[in-house]
Structure formats: C-alpha cells, structure tokens
Image (cartoon, rainbow, N blue to C red; front, side):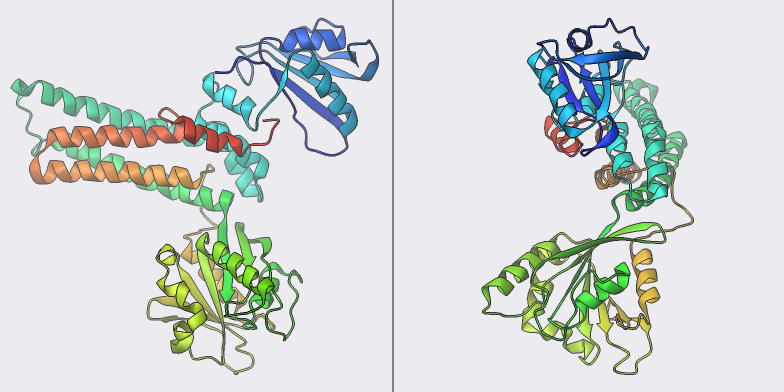
Length: 454
C-alpha cells in the first residue's frame, strides 16, 4: 500500500459554517504540528491558529488527532476544522501539500481502512451508499451495512460452507473411513440448510439493492406518442416540454422519483424514427445508448395504434432484433386512452405487459406504478435490513449456483471431489462480497466512485 500521507477536504463543496480537512499517514501529526504550532494530544480538541510557512495566520479552528491503529484508516489521522469557506480551505490544503502531504484519490481513505482491515469491502461500499442515499429507508439500511449487518450474514454463510468443505475434503483424503456420500444425510441436510439461507439473504439483498440503487426506466417510442407527457406525469412536474410537434424532445432528459420508497431513475428519449435532421439523429443515437443500459424499457405507443402492429414499425425493429436488448424487459404503455374512450387496464400482449393509461389525465398511472413495483420484486413492507449493490447480488447468485451444482454432483454421481471444488468456488464468490477474495481491478472500480474526502 502507498505509504504517502494523504490529505483531502472532507466536507461538501461550497461555503459552510465549518469545513474539515483530513490527513492520514505517517506525517499527519508532524504536518499538523507545523500548521497549528500546537502539540495535539490524542482525542483532544485543541483550539488553535492555522498558519502558513511564513507564519501568517490563515484561520482559527479546532485540531483533532487520532493515532493509529485505533483510527478510521488504521493510520495516524488529523482533522483540521476551519471555517467552511472554499478559499480558506484550499489555502490550508495547499499548505499541507507544501509540508509533504499529497491530495488523496477518490475513496482513498476508505480504501486504506479496508487494506488495514478496519472495515471489509461491503462496509466500505456502505459508506458511499450512506452518503448517496435518496430515501430514509435506504439511509437506514446503509447504516446497518456499515455496522456490519450484511457482512455478518455473509461471514456466517462462509463459515458454514467452509465447515462443510472441510468435512467433504477430509472424507476424500481418508477413504478408509468409508463415508458414503450418497447416503450421508448430514451432508445433504447441511447443503439444504445453506441453500435456504442463501435464498433468505438474497431476498434481503435484492430489497436493499432496489432501495439503494433503484431502477432505471427508459421511455422510448415513436415521436408524439406521449413519452414526455409520461415523464411529467410520473415525476409530478413539468420536466419536459410537451407540444404537438413531432421531434420536440431531441436530447436525453432525466428525472429521479420515488414510488412508495423505491427510487426510480427515469430517462426520456428522442422519438425513434428515420430522420434527415442531424440534431435529431444525434438525439436518436443517444436514445439507443440509454435504451441499452435500461433495467426496463417503457415503450410508449398511441392508443389509436393497434398493438399487434407496434413491433412491425421499421423504426422500432432494432428494439426487437438487437441482441443487446433481448434480456431487457419491455412494458408497452398504450397512451392517450382518454381519446379512445378505453378504460385504464393492465393486460398482456403475448408475454409482454401492456398498461393502457392517459398521461395527460393521470388515469391508469397507478396501474403502471403497481406494475413497476411488482416487476422489480419490490415489497414496501419488507425493506430488508441492509444495503446491497448489484455486484453483491451477482456474487450471491454465482455462489448459490456453485452450491447447487455441487449438490447435484453429489446426488447423481456421488462425486465428492466435484462437490469439494464447487464448495471452494462458492466460498470464493462469497469472499468477493466482503473483500476476502478480490482483484485490484475490482477495488479500483469500487473506490473510484467515492468522494475525495472518504
């Protein structure tokens, strides 16, 4: 690990009553002593002046010293609490760099805490989740994860998988004990119990992920189908300009809302059609970029159009035939039902959900919201007890698949060696969640999304 002493402004950008500059590393105390002219006692608040190398006073405030290893990063940490003006904070920050510190990379404080075994990877991610929480429940869940609620459940699973793996490998290494895998009810019972725990934790993690990361909805369709009106209806405000002129929306519009506590990231896109207008062509290109990264596509059509003809439209053909989109679920929103005197309903066209509504009057909007919650498996009465991310869900699914594979090998062929290998792979997948098993590339991606001061 880099042994440099790092420094960063830990409070949010902009003016405020208090601004905090944080130092971590071997030189943290000596740099703070040079700036404050005070010997900082551990865990005592010192009122002092902050001076530059020429002795000029920059500001006055509080200095705090937290010696390692009993600190957040496990290293010596100093916090300088000054007035929260961006200029004065920048002057103090610059002075710490003159004295030997370097500015921290995004998430480097949390990364050092992880590398020094002060927190695991799930807890480190919970710090960022807590800062970025958009709902009260998401913040509470992130706080529980930071305290170790999620990690504790994963560690329990790892312990059980490890114990089972030790038993299986011991039986392989000592065949004279004549353990019959096929008839050993202890192994089967343990496997079934672990699978049940996987299912319970995955359900909680799924709820936690929905509350934390939400769902990306991309509104797509032909021009003048009512896409922007639907965005305005869902967001409850006039976010998008609505006119009867085709091609009014030429760029991507984004809005963040909540449906009964579930965050939604709604993206309105330009109408999909063949166009010779260069600006509109760029808008359509951006629309396809957003569509490819959607969790669900809301395909808006005019209620005057026959649903059977929706996918025959040449401009919408890429939506059907593009291999990158085949795993993205689509909901057809048949808009303007007020003009066709059709009551709001939720039906299906083959296997594709269809919601008939009027974005203008709001009729049927609750049907769409209910459908979106159900389609994502969101249950507002079961919010879960911790925050989670999509990578956690993927790791849990991968670990469970290894476990089921091993169980199948045991049942059908009595292959203890294959079961042991699947248990090892299961253990590794779980380790990716807490960081017991992790690559440098994974760590780089995770911590690069943090704010600088964390």
